[in-house]
Image 1 (tube, rainbow, N blue to C red):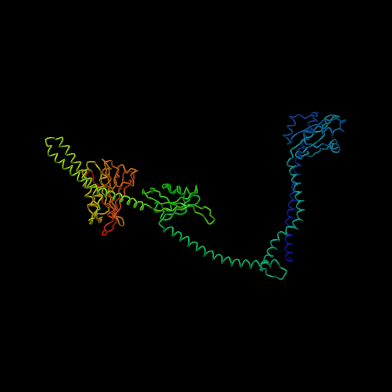
Image 2 (image 1 turned 135 degrees about the vertical axis):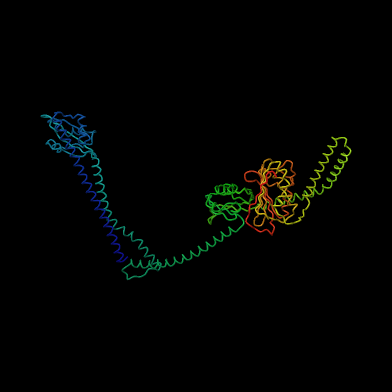
Length: 618
């Protein structure tokens, strides 16, 4: 570096020297202050020692005793703040051996260092002597007292002086620090500026090697480097603005891609649920909300165990992935939603990896298979119906011929047994059972043969009235409460009167049998956007768990005497009318049957008007 760099380095050195000198002055001031405080404290201790020596000498002279009793010594200690008092009597002949005997006397009992010959002469001359112990923690005072002619006593008292000793140690330490500072001044002034200026020199060489150093007049290297880096910083700002623009464009593209991804997730028919490694739900699309029946605002952000506490099958999927690291393949699960609806789901849970193949969460894909399961059940039902039709068609002719022959023989037997009442009664019973079997076979044939519709426009309320009138006697005898609630007077459908009446009568008959004596039945008719819905609810024992989902299957019945064909025929007729029928548990107790039929195109949609009629014992 040339002149300017040398001037800058000299300023740095001068600044360091000033700082070090200030520290040195502060250190010297501290040493002086410590010594001053030490002298003040020593003077105060000496004053107390002098007062104690005066009192002790007066005591020995007045009492002409060389020893001071321990109680008197304790009194002196409390009065003058001393830690101890010792006496050493001697005679005129023992003066020369006094220093040695004094050291022997106090050896091992105190920190008193002993007396020199000159100090002893001063004491014998009547002077008082004050000095520190060997460790500077105790300050001693000595005086010689006259006991009697030819006999004297050396009195020694001590006072606590540890703080004085610590002040002395601190003063010595400060002195050593001051000496070290003086030594460091030379080292700092020589070496530190080189280290301080090293980055500056490196910046200059870097700018020169990059071709960005702006030449100067050769005297101001600092200005040269500053101007060069100002230009570099300006270019960096321009480049930063360009980078910021590119970043905004890339962020906008990323945002668009994220929105498209969100649109895709919200548009697909499969439910998607995403959780992070902590189990917190971070994604819940519209299809998942519709399938599981949850509001996304109540799900996102919560732990999956809490969010899906009512559908543990979903929680088990995430447990397998997050806790055991096992991705679950496609599987079918059945669950009951919070609204009580039974749904079948196709579920698959996978691990989510980031760009570095690190696990960051799990995703579950849910597909609503309820309709597919329903179609499968319908297909199975139709398959059984077809098999039943083939069987029934083959057996109907033979069974009817046999039953006709049995009925004919019974009728003949009744005519010839008019004189035998018992035989006549047995023949009547046989004929009645034959007629019952004939009726059963007729129902089999009705169920098995293809049905054809004679469509007409029907008023559902009138049709229900006709059906309930059929059961009025049984309802009255069992004291059953029947409530019919129609949301509108003109809810009409297009269908076969006889077949639909058979459907409603079958369901009402099951409800009456289930409700039993004193039971309740509620019939409700309402309109949706495109359907008329009839709901029949009873408060009976409900549907056994083992039979749920099987009651529309032929020969499956919850009643001991049931044939299992009534609901199967109901299902067949409703499907023929392009409708749907379901049977499940009611809220609380009992069972509910829901029949949904396409509404007649001439219906005018209007706000529901409650028109309820309650029939008690009718």
